[in-house]
Structure formats: structure tokens, C-alpha cells
Image (cartoon, rainbow, N blue to C red; front, side, top):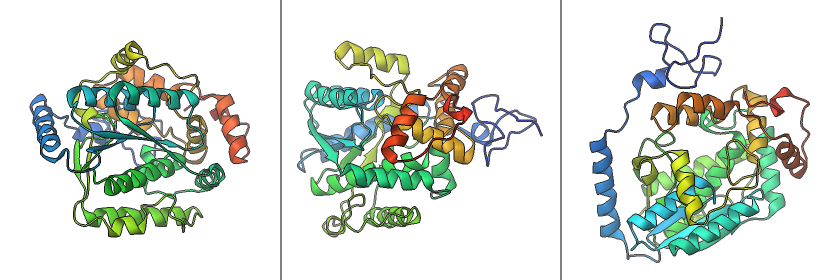
Length: 345
């Protein structure tokens, strides 16, 4: 059976679980997708306004912010502080052992520009490398939905960040955690966490780590048990304001370059902050046969934040052989002589 490609986004029938309706030419996601209307976006923004005004000033910080130093997180922090200058923000950058020097420089610069406090979350490099290697060598360690949204390596890294941001929010008594997810990446602008959900998420990640052979007995990656005990009934909420603002990569870059953010010196088609990303994409392609950014890219195309042509170009851009080999060396892994090093799909 020949491959069918969705007429609206970039998903195709070769990706497990994707069916293309022969009559409409659309994948299931495009057939059922309903974007937020302008009115709905305005209502969500009004609700975020009220949340910030009602709950700010009650903890050490109002917002724990996920700052990678990449373009989207840098832009969102800038716009967040421009829209809500009264917010006291702790920007947390996770140095996963592969964070580029330019990303660290950009993150520190953005904190200085916006008047936010900067905190670099660091861990012993060899422990991180062992964990990422275990993730790379695993197969189906994460549920299908997570596997479709990111590589196994990125799923581990992202979940570590989420666990530690929640931990910081509880410690600092901050009512909000903010991520720079676009409408294509997160259709839900406001997520109100509960104490039971926080406990469940910790238990789930602990099991996923064990599945790839990692026993986090020292709670380096997990929310610390003593912090959860002190949480009480006031769990933080997660906000995604970027998915409510007008978005285009060109606009984001234009804004950032004007205020002093600098283009990264890494040749990666999908990341402006992490030198592990090319290897993570390569590893995902080798194991599962499809690009780990296909779903996010399809979401951006579906929501109108990226053209279909730009979407295809993004997931078909060449992966950096140099970055793949450098990451493999750090992880003490071998790279197969594969065409997938040279082409991303």
C-alpha cells in the first residue's frame, strides 16, 4: 500500500497509528481539529490576567519559568514581563550537559533584560549521560502519545524539567509555572494541577525511569518526597500564554534580535539551545522510523502558525552529522552508518 500524506498537515500513513481518510485526504487530527477562536483566546487571556492579579505577591515568586535560552522561551519571557511587569519571576534553565554556551549566554541576558532572577539547574554530567544513554537504548519506554511527541531522550529530559519546576514552585510557594509552548504544542492554555496529580506524575516518572534501567533513589530527577509532603493542598497551575499570542518564527526572531538575543552557533534544524537534539532525532528515527518532531510540526501547520511547505522543510532538513557524532561520543555510543544521519526523514 502506497504512503498517504494528509492534505492539511505533514503526517502520513507510514507513522504508526496515523490513518488518512481516503475521501477527505485528512488525518484524524485534522478532521477533528477545532482551533481556539479569537473570542476564546481573549477569554483565556482575561482569565490569566485575573489569576496573576489575584495570586501574585503571596509567595517568594509568582512564576517559576522554564527558560531554555532558545528562541521561543526567550521570546515568551520577554513578552510575559512586558505584559505583566509586576510579576516576580524565577527563570530556571536546566543544564543537561548538552546546553550550548550561546543558550546559557542568551538565558542570562534575557533575565537581565526582563529583571528576572536566574537559576541554573545542574546535575552531575556522568549521571545525566548514563540516563540519556539508557533512554537511547530503550524501546517503547514511554506511552505512544509521548513517543509521538518527542524522542525517548527528550521525553526523559523534558520530564526531569517538569518535575523540578513543580518542586521549585512548591518550595518557593509560587502559584504558577509557565512554559513557552505554542498552540501547536499545547492546545490547553491553563492547566490547574492537583496534589493528587502531582503525586501521580512523580510515581509515573519513577516507573518510566525504572523501565529504562534508572533507579533515582537520590531523587535527582524526581520531585523530592519531603517536598511533596510539605505541599499541602495548594498545587501550582501551569500556564501556556504563548499559545494565545500571535506567533510566527520570523516575528519571534525579529523581536529577539532587536533586544540583543543572539543566534545560536549550533547547526540544528529543530533546536536553538541543545546540542543533543540531533542525536535524539537520529536515535528516534532509527528505532521508530518517523521524525519525533512530526506531531509538533503538524500541530503548528494545523493551527496556522507554520505553512505546510515550511512544515515539510522542517522535518526533512538534514540532521547534523557533527552534532550526532559529538553527542554519541559523550554518551559512549556508536553511530550506525545510516542515511538517517544525513536526512531527517
